[in-house]
Image (tube, rainbow, N blue to C red; front, side):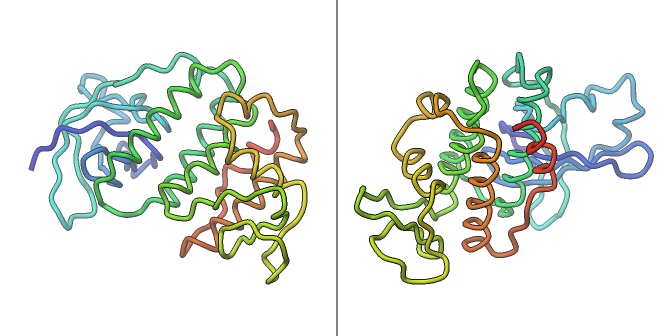
Amino acid sequence: MLIKTKLIVLHSLRFGEADLIVRCFTKEKGSLSFLLKGVLKSKKGKLKSSLFQPLHMLDAVVQHKEGRKLSYFREAKIDFPYKSISTNIFKSSIALFLAELIGICIQEEEQNPSLYHFLEEQFIALDQSDQFANFHLKFMVDFTKYLGFLPQKGNPQEAYFNLEDGQFQATETNNYCLQNANTKLLQQLLQENKETTQQFNLNQNRRQEFIQMMLLYYQLHLSGFRKPKSLEVLNQLF
């Protein structure tokens, strides 16, 4: 079956001498993996390996059969040409981290147009933004809405955040209840928009500690979740 769909590239893996296996999140079918035969050696083919960089947004025609592990591209072209993500090392490190995070969290072959719209909007904003040091922090919080465990907003009297239940509360009830600077930052990120949160004055340690808290939160709510390998590179820059 041929399907016309928009998609976001999450990961590319070399397979053999000339092939690529590409993992994507598609607007029409959710998470799909594709085999591109000979794309690394072909100079005359319509499909170039440069198309399949992490977070590239493509407009494509794909061949897909239900139940098969691999699908195939028939056509693909850039849907939104990035101006800075591919050339700015700081933005590209965020892009690699978020692409890996999305790939770990989204495994289902299931249509989710609202999630696709969210991701599309987020990455266009990252490409166009001049201030982005806290972008991945805000993304990690907002992404939980589409994964089904968005933290419930608290009030000033509820100083503890219960990682297990995903809610703020006034008292400590288990070992996953935290009361620290990270929980205050989480409340702020839940309440403010992505433009405002880029104004937050956070140092490298604050960002890294918050990410560790959020990764634990993801782990508690997603079976099989693992820490992204690209986090090490991200931590060197932020």
